[in-house]
Image (spheres, rainbow, N blue to C red):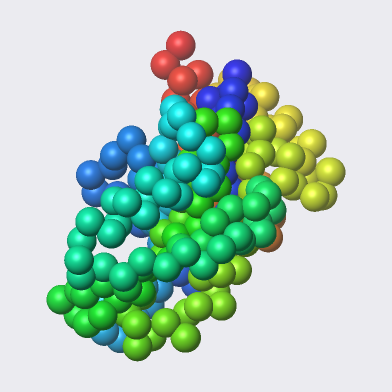
Length: 214
């Protein structure tokens, strides 16, 4: 069974053209980040984090988040209210804080479901906020929870083809051929975005390597 079948996976569409970067020192919470191209030393960013096994609902979780953020007297906290996403209703909060590059705006979209918090955090200099606000909110609203990575594929033919390919990865093809076929299928579904592609490729390569070691 594929590792992402057993539980919910949160998907989202990063802003077009933003560069993907995995954390250099991965933690159990932060999953991945994306950076915009910028002419300054501060690059606008969005990162995705998960906090598991929490014992609170969304309202209680936001209360705890506020408590943490407001411990810093230099941070201004605003609860911007509900945010409708594809995964359901989340909460949008805004932080304003200093940085070495100038005052910074931080937006967080938080969804809580099944004792897990899914958090998208965007950071951008206050002076650039208006330029990136729409793209950030669009990414936040794209958050959805799925039980597998095949179901978001709207083209049923492509969905069936990708499922069939996963069934044969590492068994009926050599490694190079399997990787090439996987990449080809992923490229044929651009509408699901770079994070979805990253997850499918990660799982596919893990399956290839697992079969190769048997």
